[in-house]
Amino acid sequence: MRHRLVIVLSALAVLAGAWPASSQTYTVQKPRRQFITVSYDWLYTQPLHFGEHPVEDLVGQEVAAAQFEAFDYRTRDGTILIDVLEFKRRGHGAGVTVYPFGLSVGAALGLRASFEDLPIIRIAFDGAGAPPPYALTGARAYDVSAAIFVADRSNGWGLGSHAFVGGGIGRIKSDSHGGDRIFAEGGGGLNSGPVGVELSIKFAWNHLTEPVDHHFITVPITVRGTLSF
Image 1: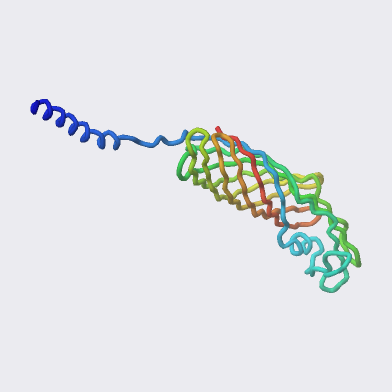
Image 2: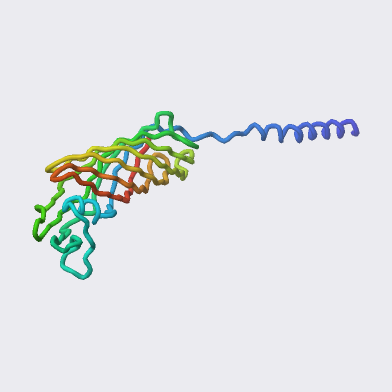
């Protein structure tokens, strides 16, 4: 009887010693790498320093904002009155982001090609020496950019997240003339499996040459629906 008890206790000791060793071999499986993300974008664009660019560029002299008047700006000498008739803030776009080395957990490089609507801008001028009315319609920007992504994706349909910062260049085409631009962009998003949503803010310096050489700064706040593979 005593001999059998010794055998049972020895077997239990072996099992107890083997349990921690087997638990240490367990590893968490990394999420599958994704290499392409396509998006559809909804934009709400804010102007920045609009009185300086493009208004001052168009009239060729400094302007000041008008308070409680029927117009928006006037030149410093008061000879030209400026009325911003339209600045359409809402627009749409789409894009494709490629991750050359894959995106899973940690940092990754992303290369993006996209297009987005630029605001419709209409400005009227009145007074001695005033330029003709200004209109930017049907304008669209075609951009390419590079960004660094930091991701924490999950397996399956678990909730994951990412953030990014980058910059790029673009070409502008409109109904009447074209131009170019540079920009910086940052944002982040959430995803469940291949489906996600992303929020970004872009600061773009837009350059046009007609009717005179001028610039304007746009700050689109963008919500993107994304699908990744």
